[in-house]
Image (cartoon, rainbow, N blue to C red; front, side, top):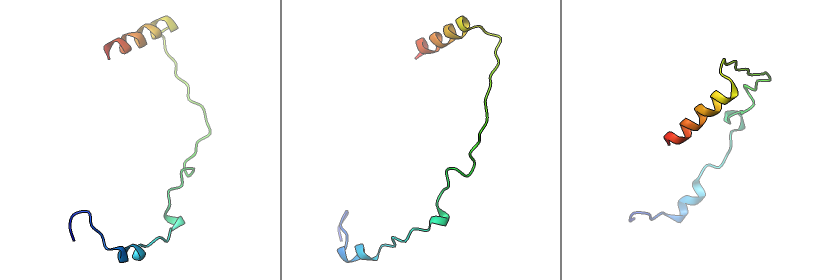
Length: 57
């Protein structure tokens, strides 16, 4: 067989059984809580920092 060729008879041999126990559970580590961030900078300082980061790009 050449590159990219396949034998159509092999298409029926594919294992399509899905093991749901082995699947990733995206809700396994859910967290209900809050995140807080305290800063001594006022909003004008933070906006200036954001603008300078945007200007660097």
